[in-house]
Image (cartoon, rainbow, N blue to C red):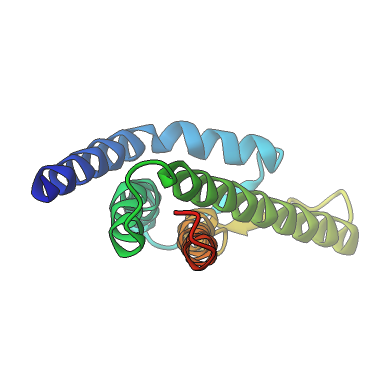
Length: 156
């Protein structure tokens, strides 16, 4: 029974990985819209592929980490939604914090150099996808701590 459950987690992870991998251009457009379409500099041609893989990993790891935390705390599906929600919410929070940081940086540079200069942002310094990946890991840790607390109170 447990191997069947892990196969479901693995299958769901693969589906989410490939869905996120192919949805990455739409995410990239959304990020550029949130940043008011900045001028970008590309120094490394492979940077887009690396960001695409990190973005896909951020979503693909959610079911695997959910299965791992569920296994560690012996949750039977009743509290797995806590893990999913915690990971997704922290991923979104980290994404938006990075967007706010980049917007502040762009505003700062625009004020520093004036309106007559075009501000360029290096693509490899944006790292929105990396922030999302770290956010999902932190969300998993928060969910694990929450489930540990529930387990100590014998609510699980």
